[in-house]
Image (cartoon, rainbow, N blue to C red; front, side, top):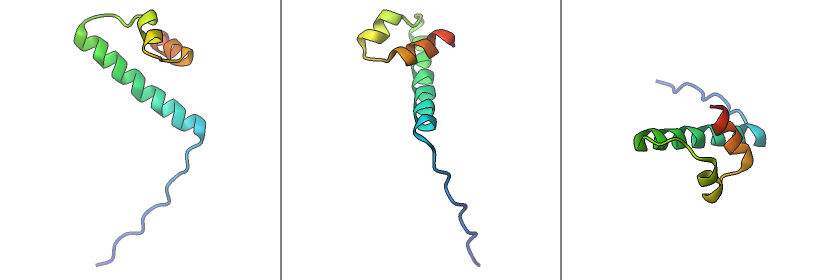
Length: 61
């Protein structure tokens, strides 16, 4: 039996990688807040070192 040829991997741009990372981080922050039963606070996120861009996405979600 022959193995099927693997499809070439798509190369993602820096913006796509950043957006994917932000989406994953946003999901994790939202899940953590849901587990604790507390809303996400802007000041706390700034204190933890999150960027303004990320915090804006959190506020939109």
